[in-house]
Image (cartoon, rainbow, N blue to C red; front, side, top):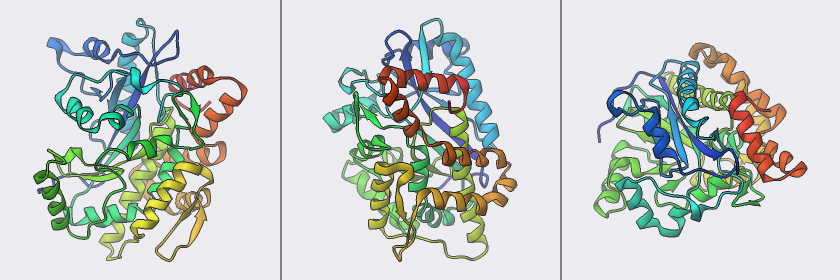
Length: 374
């Protein structure tokens, strides 16, 4: 299984957006119309705006970039291209890990064979995938680094999940979880936390087994929270709920970018990267989904534990030189605002406490337009 050549620590970001009816605050099944109207000459697809599983969703994507800031500029340009289409249709753009009150049963699936196959196979669980995420790709220049870096990221992926948690509601109910998306999404086959393979040949054997037995047809159908992307030559971090504004997309992307580059540099220096046992990884995922910024996470194979906010504060200090090297000092510093002001799920719960779920939708729409937390 070849791994594409990729520039070290290049970065790309994918951000799934909700199409919101401006009058009802519910989701609009309008992606086909929107994508047709943003298409280029001759109907060429917009390079930065893609379809997704459901017709209530469009995905904005960056190019392959040198810095997180450059990727953010790509995302903003795509959003700016959407507005002249969505505004006259009375469609608002918003994002979060879930919509506060939309019903999964009412959502329509995009007319593509791979989506129809997914729903046919997964049935009820597949129809529950009313979920939105942010995916961050970071280039890896040497295939030998991929699995050690992926294993090391499993010591920090739950911290990213807590910072990005934005799905406290599901179909009109407060779930008690910071990220209900995290636990819903892992119900799909091959989704959830990745296996921690030590050798590339072991990953190849897994992919061969899954293909031979009909579990997957292509590598992209492996939907782990963090996965290699052999076609692109990247590690793809998919664990985070969709952020509600561009500032937080870039903050969490910068932290992800810095972690990957730091682990890569430590490998170059001859270090053995940290790992945690799979049972601690699974426990951290659940704790993070349940408690978000109040989660006490397991740090190492000795079982040492620490409040997520304390670990993240220390990470920001340790990664500051890496951020300077990668040109994302400003974006990484914005993680501190999440520590100080709370994650999206906390803001949504505060709005709901003083109003209702339509007010929560209005807050999501407001943050998208503002580009930062409100």
